[in-house]
Image (cartoon, rainbow, N blue to C red; front, side):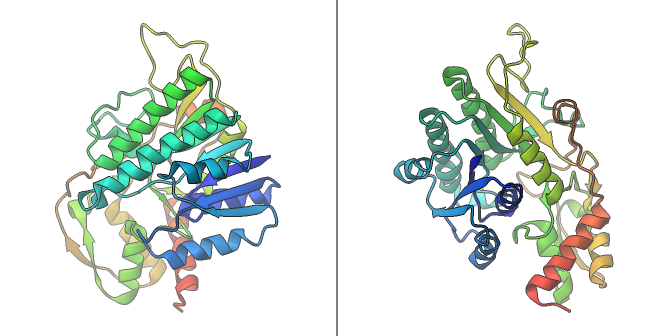
Length: 335
């Protein structure tokens, strides 16, 4: 089939597009190649995809409706929407970027799906939507009305927008709440990348919440496998849905939500130890308090993912970090 993948030059998008291409699908990739982080890394990801004959790249801005309309003229069968303005702290500097990309951009994707009879829209949400919730592990059946960052608020809004379009127009939609995705080709603004870079260089690292953050680190290969499996399982209405006791994770519309996480939170101090082992050098730590908008702990309940899709992420943190550090050294030329 032909799949439209947004954010095709991004960390998750590029590897999802590659997996679809390798199994024989045709992929139309869209990205704006903005400079939120190193554009050369994005171009290197794209170069891997452009080796495939069935890949087409379109540079476009999601916030521009006419550009998105032109992308849908390629007539995709299904859509994997992974493009977004990411990051919690960047919203303090540039909140409008989140409204443009994550709200206006998502509306344009929904409109494209509506007018082109898309078989299934799979889109990226985030574990950040759980916000002030402290009931662990986080479940898709929990209420998520207390986001702690603008980024989280836009992702919650995406879920609501997707549900309204699924209800009104019968579009099958599945939202995926990603939990701290990491691995080769990862984002330079994320802690694993920053820590590895600075430890190799012998520079101190900023360790927020004094290292007591716990994150449900999920390896990129596991995330991509989950996405591809979910693309193939078109969302359907829940026959058990009850409007008198509504379940946030399902609906009478063809709408689903899944947590995509390792379901095994790891404390940041242990992550640093794993990096030190893989790099072969001790870190210089600058211990700092919890930052505004940060959630102290994430932990995914993946029962719905296992029950419906039959899939469970399986890469241990030690192996995942070793594979990331090996890629980093190779890509950036460190012996």
